[in-house]
Length: 266
Image (tube, rainbow, N blue to C red; front, side, top):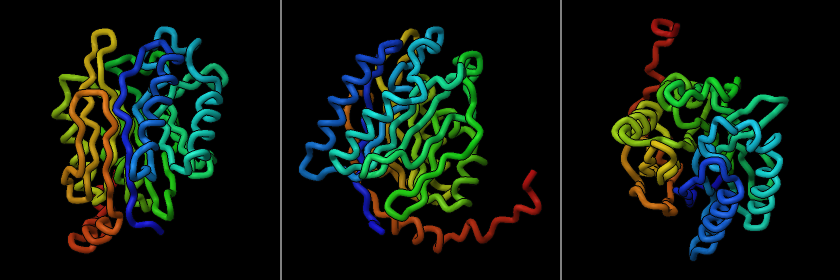
C-alpha cells in the first residue's frame, strides 16, 4: 500500500448547457495536471462539470449512460497511469437523469460509481434529477475511500457510515456558490474532524446565471487542518497527503471505539 498520494483538483469554470466547451476545458486542465515534474496519483474535478446546472434542458444534454465520459476518462487514466475521481456528470438512464461520479484506476477501469442521494431543493434538483440509492465506495491503492457530492456534506450520518465501513478518505466534488462559503469550509472541516479522515473537496468557480461560485477547493487532514486550499480563480490545486496520519489520529483519540450507538442510533 502506498501511504502517500499526490492529488490534483481541477477547479474549473463550467459553461452551463455546453458539454462541448466543458469537455474541451477539462481536457486542457487534465493535460496540464499530468505534465508536472511530480505527476499526481489522483485527479478530481467538480460536480456536474459536463453540463452545469442547465436543468431545464438536462434531459437532452445529459450523457447517455455516461458513455462519452467513461470513454474519455478511461482512455486518459490508462494513457497517463493516474486514478481519476471523475467529478460528477449529468447522465441519463432509461429517462432518469442522475448526478453521477465515475471513478477510474490507473489502468482506465471503472472501479466505482456513485449517484448523489440528497437532492438540493434550493436549486430544484428534485424536479429534474433522480436520487441515487447506494453508498459511494472506492479502494485506492489499498486504502478505502468514500464519495459524496456537494449537498451530501450536510448529512453527517452519510460520512460517518462511510467511515464506519473503513473509509480513510472522502472525495467531494461540488458546485457550491456564494454566499455560503462559511458553510462549505465549516462542514468540510467538521466531516474531517469527526470522522478522523482526509477530506478532498473540489468546487467549481465562475458565474452561471444568477449564481457566483467561489472555488475554495480544499484538502483537509484528519485533524481538520487545511493541507491546501485554492482561492476563487480557475486553477489546479495540488497537495500530497500521508495516509498514515489517519491511523495515528484515530489511535490518539479513539472516537470509533468510544461510540455508543445503542443509545443514539435512530
